[in-house]
Length: 400
Image (cartoon, rainbow, N blue to C red; front, top):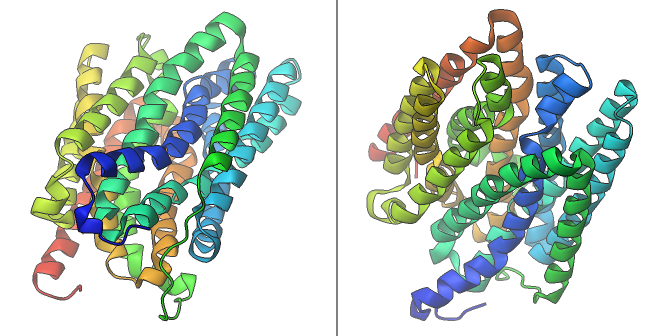
């Protein structure tokens, strides 16, 4: 760990962070490969409803949710490397299961059951990778770079989704869904070998007692709730955009997801310093307002071109929500609980993405596909209102 964090050249900071968040890119690249084709495979190939497709996709976030606390504990006690190694093994196993689900495609019930296991294994891997690369970078550079590490980690995750989703579609159209499973196995093995080559780092030892995870979770919960509400916008786009476009007989659904992800990355690159200059809560408030606007445009769009504009604005808005709120949340816990704090905070995005499938799928089933974006816009706007409330309490000194 660096002894004089303020002396580290910016180029070295970036290089170090990139070296660790590469694991995030690897993990989310495998997730992105399957993201655009699984809902269509379940609905059109296996013959199940959009509700079932949403539930199956969201199962991933059940195990992710359950593993966040465990991953944070591993990071605080043993360092990030063990969690990353387990994660890469999990992604490789998810690829094997996905290939098996493709082989069983002529037996819908068996294929769907295998996809359940696939999504649970993917969630296991995502739960372990979620906060581990961020903490690895922070341990190497110091707490000063928490916001920057979170921002780079988000660029890695959504950049991976932007790259993985169209590649998954190409592989599916050219070779079938089984090829995606094979690629996921290969990428997971590459990540495992890379993780083994990295030096293990643990956080600074401190005499401060570690707080129980439930207490840490309670501390970060207000910020996590804002994140969860903001995440419903992304969850709706990522899970249902292919079905939404198909319902309207539009083409370019994967492009819509890619535009969201690209603008997300652009937002983090261009406005990364806004958290340091304007503060986390002010940044989060403006971002949630922008995301709500993008979702409103998606709702009112009468052409795929207009929908792309809405998706881009929503991606730009969502870009800094996670790091902006995360910086504020982590400040409220002792350094001995930093891994648990980031893991606990991350639980809320898992919760958000986990309920998006059945919740928005239910809206689509009961009211119609056209209602999914006004619903998600309302949820994100609720997050904006909550963020404004927390920001006002902070300014009054009611939150440390």
